Amino acid sequence: MVDLDYLAYLEEFLTENRKQRFFEVLKNRTNHFTVAVEDIFQFHNTSAVIRSCEVFGIQELNIVEQRFGKNIDKEIAMGSQKWVDINKFETIGNCIETLKDRGYQIIATTPHNDSCLLHEFDVTKKSAFFFGTEKEGLSEEVLSKADGYLKIPMVGFTESLNISVSAAIIIQDLTNRLRQSGVNWQLSDDEIMKKRLLWAKNSIKDIKRIEERYYSNLKA
Image (tube, rainbow, N blue to C red):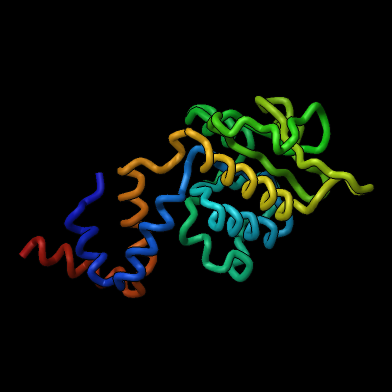
């Protein structure tokens, strides 16, 4: 549960425009869909996916760091990492198991197999979309454990797109159709309160000093 008094205290340090912007953004956020990226070698691609999630309203991104580095290109992400929840996993198996336990079907994005075309995908199902490495695509583990496959229709000679481009196209299309559906896709009241608290903290530069003042006043 969120400490409402603490939240109210922190929001006193925000402008009315800032608080209103939080409300406007949060009403379009969703956990009905989530995104997972597997062993992305080029950091700017992961950062670009974070940015796409933030822009189109996906609240959580899952990053599997089984083989490569663990940095986020903040210039490419342009601060979006402050507004998206990033879950990190050391193995793809742990990531898949965790998401399945949370009720997500695992969808592998791949131009191969009998993949569902993007415009035909059923947005009513709670889904986690997996994107793979730049050259090799998704691992065999993801492909074998996936509940379904998804691809972007293409009519040119090249059969694949850069991961950040693919993610942007898929996320934009699916979130747009989700908002037009009858699915209860929005964050719960409790989730919204937690985001308001976190975002308020992320927006205040001297947050540690302000927190200390708040709790010392409680003890007084």
